Amino acid sequence: MIRIVTIVGGAFLVAACADMPVSGTSIPGPTYESAKSSGLLAANFDAADQLLSMAQRPLGAQVPIIVTTLVNLDDLNQTSSLGRLISEHIATRVTQRGLNVAELRLTSKVYVRAATGGEMMLSRDIREIAANHNAQAVIVGTFSVGSEYVYVNVKLIEGGENRVIAAHSYLLPNVGQVKVLARGRIGPS
Image: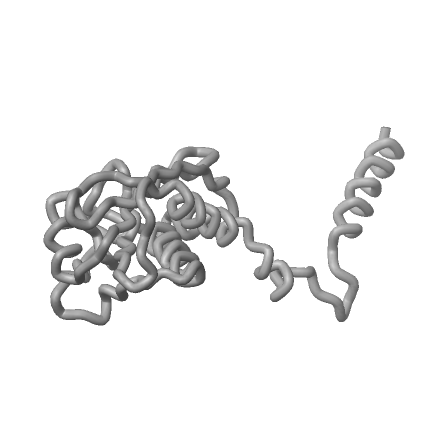
Protein backbone atom coordinates (compact mmCIF):
# COMPACT_ATOMS: atom_id res chain seq x y z
CA MET A 1 0.00 0.00 0.00
CA ILE A 2 2.81 2.40 0.91
CA ARG A 3 4.47 1.58 -2.40
CA ILE A 4 1.29 2.48 -4.36
CA VAL A 5 0.94 5.81 -2.48
CA THR A 6 4.61 6.56 -3.15
CA ILE A 7 4.25 5.82 -6.88
CA VAL A 8 1.05 7.87 -7.21
CA GLY A 9 2.55 10.73 -5.17
CA GLY A 10 5.70 10.64 -7.30
CA ALA A 11 3.64 10.77 -10.50
CA PHE A 12 1.82 13.90 -9.24
CA LEU A 13 5.14 15.51 -8.30
CA VAL A 14 6.62 14.83 -11.74
CA ALA A 15 3.49 16.18 -13.45
CA ALA A 16 3.56 19.33 -11.30
CA CYS A 17 7.24 19.95 -11.99
CA ALA A 18 6.76 19.51 -15.73
CA ASP A 19 4.85 22.80 -15.88
CA MET A 20 7.36 24.73 -13.79
CA PRO A 21 9.94 26.86 -15.58
CA VAL A 22 13.51 25.68 -15.56
CA SER A 23 15.82 27.86 -13.50
CA GLY A 24 16.74 30.97 -15.49
CA THR A 25 13.71 30.79 -17.80
CA SER A 26 10.34 32.43 -17.49
CA ILE A 27 6.77 31.50 -18.26
CA PRO A 28 5.78 33.03 -21.59
CA GLY A 29 3.34 35.90 -21.23
CA PRO A 30 1.77 38.47 -23.49
CA THR A 31 3.93 39.65 -26.34
CA TYR A 32 3.77 42.48 -28.85
CA GLU A 33 2.96 39.88 -31.50
CA SER A 34 0.04 38.45 -29.51
CA ALA A 35 -1.20 41.98 -28.79
CA LYS A 36 -1.37 42.69 -32.54
CA SER A 37 -3.86 39.85 -32.94
CA SER A 38 -6.12 40.80 -30.03
CA GLY A 39 -9.57 39.29 -30.43
CA LEU A 40 -11.11 42.16 -28.44
CA LEU A 41 -9.70 44.78 -30.79
CA ALA A 42 -10.73 42.77 -33.86
CA ALA A 43 -14.30 42.32 -32.57
CA ASN A 44 -14.69 46.03 -31.87
CA PHE A 45 -13.17 47.06 -35.21
CA ASP A 46 -15.56 44.65 -36.92
CA ALA A 47 -18.49 46.23 -35.04
CA ALA A 48 -17.51 49.66 -36.38
CA ASP A 49 -17.14 48.23 -39.90
CA GLN A 50 -20.59 46.63 -39.63
CA LEU A 51 -22.21 49.89 -38.51
CA LEU A 52 -20.65 51.86 -41.34
CA SER A 53 -21.50 49.27 -43.99
CA MET A 54 -25.13 48.94 -42.82
CA ALA A 55 -25.85 52.68 -42.60
CA GLN A 56 -29.14 53.42 -44.34
CA ARG A 57 -27.69 56.59 -45.81
CA PRO A 58 -24.19 57.56 -46.94
CA LEU A 59 -22.02 59.30 -44.34
CA GLY A 60 -19.96 62.30 -45.38
CA ALA A 61 -16.25 62.26 -44.67
CA GLN A 62 -16.11 65.88 -43.47
CA VAL A 63 -19.16 66.11 -41.21
CA PRO A 64 -18.37 64.85 -37.68
CA ILE A 65 -19.56 61.65 -36.06
CA ILE A 66 -19.72 61.42 -32.27
CA VAL A 67 -18.86 58.18 -30.47
CA THR A 68 -20.21 57.93 -26.93
CA THR A 69 -19.12 55.68 -24.09
CA LEU A 70 -20.95 52.38 -23.95
CA VAL A 71 -23.04 52.00 -20.80
CA ASN A 72 -24.30 49.13 -18.68
CA LEU A 73 -27.67 47.95 -20.00
CA ASP A 74 -28.94 47.44 -16.43
CA ASP A 75 -27.93 50.95 -15.30
CA LEU A 76 -27.52 53.54 -18.05
CA ASN A 77 -25.63 55.80 -15.63
CA GLN A 78 -22.84 53.26 -15.23
CA THR A 79 -19.97 52.20 -17.45
CA SER A 80 -16.72 50.29 -16.99
CA SER A 81 -13.22 50.22 -18.39
CA LEU A 82 -14.59 47.82 -20.99
CA GLY A 83 -17.34 50.26 -22.05
CA ARG A 84 -14.83 53.06 -22.44
CA LEU A 85 -12.34 50.86 -24.31
CA ILE A 86 -14.95 49.58 -26.77
CA SER A 87 -15.88 53.19 -27.53
CA GLU A 88 -12.23 54.09 -28.09
CA HIS A 89 -11.77 51.12 -30.44
CA ILE A 90 -14.88 52.04 -32.43
CA ALA A 91 -13.80 55.70 -32.70
CA THR A 92 -10.37 54.59 -33.89
CA ARG A 93 -11.83 52.35 -36.57
CA VAL A 94 -14.31 54.98 -37.79
CA THR A 95 -11.37 57.41 -38.10
CA GLN A 96 -9.30 54.79 -39.96
CA ARG A 97 -12.19 54.42 -42.40
CA GLY A 98 -11.76 58.10 -43.32
CA LEU A 99 -14.59 59.68 -41.35
CA ASN A 100 -14.35 62.70 -39.07
CA VAL A 101 -14.80 61.73 -35.39
CA ALA A 102 -15.40 64.60 -32.96
CA GLU A 103 -13.42 64.28 -29.72
CA LEU A 104 -15.89 65.30 -27.03
CA ARG A 105 -13.38 65.39 -24.19
CA LEU A 106 -11.61 68.35 -25.75
CA THR A 107 -14.60 70.66 -25.83
CA SER A 108 -16.41 72.60 -23.14
CA LYS A 109 -19.74 72.49 -25.01
CA VAL A 110 -20.47 68.96 -23.83
CA TYR A 111 -21.02 68.05 -20.22
CA VAL A 112 -18.79 65.07 -19.50
CA ARG A 113 -19.91 63.20 -16.41
CA ALA A 114 -16.65 62.91 -14.49
CA ALA A 115 -18.19 60.61 -11.89
CA THR A 116 -18.98 58.04 -14.55
CA GLY A 117 -15.78 58.36 -16.56
CA GLY A 118 -17.20 59.05 -19.99
CA GLU A 119 -19.48 60.80 -22.40
CA MET A 120 -22.68 58.97 -21.52
CA MET A 121 -25.62 60.08 -23.52
CA LEU A 122 -29.33 59.49 -23.14
CA SER A 123 -31.55 59.68 -26.22
CA ARG A 124 -32.93 63.11 -25.28
CA ASP A 125 -29.38 64.51 -25.38
CA ILE A 126 -28.45 63.15 -28.82
CA ARG A 127 -30.24 65.81 -30.85
CA GLU A 128 -28.80 68.68 -28.77
CA ILE A 129 -25.21 67.40 -28.78
CA ALA A 130 -25.35 66.51 -32.47
CA ALA A 131 -26.60 70.02 -33.23
CA ASN A 132 -23.89 71.64 -31.07
CA HIS A 133 -21.20 69.78 -33.02
CA ASN A 134 -22.97 69.76 -36.37
CA ALA A 135 -22.68 65.95 -36.19
CA GLN A 136 -24.26 63.84 -38.87
CA ALA A 137 -24.49 60.82 -36.59
CA VAL A 138 -23.86 59.55 -33.09
CA ILE A 139 -22.69 56.06 -32.14
CA VAL A 140 -24.17 54.83 -28.87
CA GLY A 141 -24.12 51.45 -27.20
CA THR A 142 -24.73 49.20 -24.25
CA PHE A 143 -23.09 46.14 -22.76
CA SER A 144 -24.41 43.48 -20.42
CA VAL A 145 -22.09 41.13 -18.52
CA GLY A 146 -23.19 37.50 -18.36
CA SER A 147 -21.42 34.55 -16.83
CA GLU A 148 -19.85 33.42 -20.12
CA TYR A 149 -20.22 36.37 -22.48
CA VAL A 150 -20.45 40.14 -22.54
CA TYR A 151 -23.32 41.13 -24.81
CA VAL A 152 -22.60 44.32 -26.76
CA ASN A 153 -25.06 46.39 -28.78
CA VAL A 154 -24.03 49.45 -30.81
CA LYS A 155 -26.20 51.77 -32.87
CA LEU A 156 -25.52 54.52 -35.37
CA ILE A 157 -28.12 57.23 -34.84
CA GLU A 158 -28.85 60.03 -37.28
CA GLY A 159 -27.83 63.23 -35.49
CA GLY A 160 -30.82 65.47 -36.06
CA GLU A 161 -33.56 62.87 -36.02
CA ASN A 162 -32.76 60.36 -33.25
CA ARG A 163 -33.41 57.68 -35.87
CA VAL A 164 -31.35 54.47 -35.84
CA ILE A 165 -29.69 54.09 -39.23
CA ALA A 166 -27.56 51.02 -38.38
CA ALA A 167 -27.26 48.57 -35.50
CA HIS A 168 -24.97 45.70 -34.63
CA SER A 169 -24.90 43.19 -31.76
CA TYR A 170 -22.01 40.92 -30.86
CA LEU A 171 -20.58 38.84 -28.03
CA LEU A 172 -17.24 38.95 -26.27
CA PRO A 173 -16.07 35.97 -24.22
CA ASN A 174 -16.13 36.95 -20.55
CA VAL A 175 -12.59 35.72 -19.82
CA GLY A 176 -9.12 37.16 -19.33
CA GLN A 177 -8.78 40.86 -20.06
CA VAL A 178 -12.45 41.25 -20.96
CA LYS A 179 -13.44 40.03 -17.50
CA VAL A 180 -10.94 42.36 -15.81
CA LEU A 181 -12.09 45.37 -17.85
CA ALA A 182 -15.79 44.61 -17.28
CA ARG A 183 -15.24 44.60 -13.51
CA GLY A 184 -13.72 48.09 -13.61
CA ARG A 185 -17.14 49.66 -13.01
CA ILE A 186 -17.50 53.38 -12.76
CA GLY A 187 -20.63 55.16 -11.68
CA PRO A 188 -23.06 55.26 -8.77
CA SER A 189 -23.21 52.11 -6.69
